Image 1 (cartoon, rainbow, N blue to C red):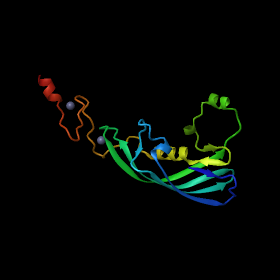
Image 2 (tube, rainbow, N blue to C red):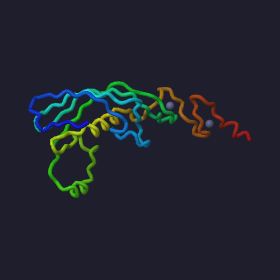
Image 3 (tube, rainbow, N blue to C red):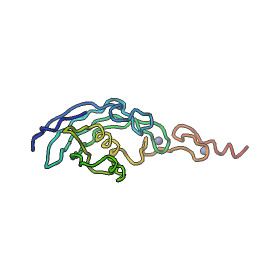
Image 4 (cartoon, rainbow, N blue to C red):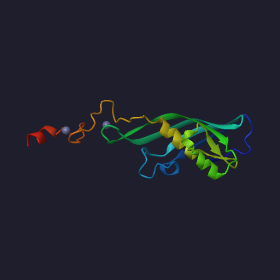
Length: 165
Ligand SMILES: [Zn+2]
Ligand SMILES: [Zn+2]
């Protein structure tokens, strides 16, 4: 997912089209809140505007998400807009950077070095940002009973029975 932009001229546009899978996007570790059902399709234009490299296009993905109410997995997906800005990394020592305690997620642009942009991290962030804050398997999901913990979408609450005992 690396694109050479060293010789990219102003106003020149490179069209790219590729697939991104769980491994390349860091969703394969089992801890991720997203898991792609199949590789995501990425279609984008890479363009130099001013000192920045802009990547604009779309990501089409079918994902497995976990419902925030019933904790069941469900499938969601579609097409989301992709918009990334890359700027050449400033020259500083790695130690200084750690002191700043800046993570890539805190910046509204990504940095690149050596005339090459790596789209993986940008696409990963773009997908994560496109997710709902509280994913729901369906709008009227009943969730889990706070007493017995049963999934009320497909099981009956057994709290009353426990009280009778
Ligand atoms: Zn649910
Ligand atoms: Zn219950």
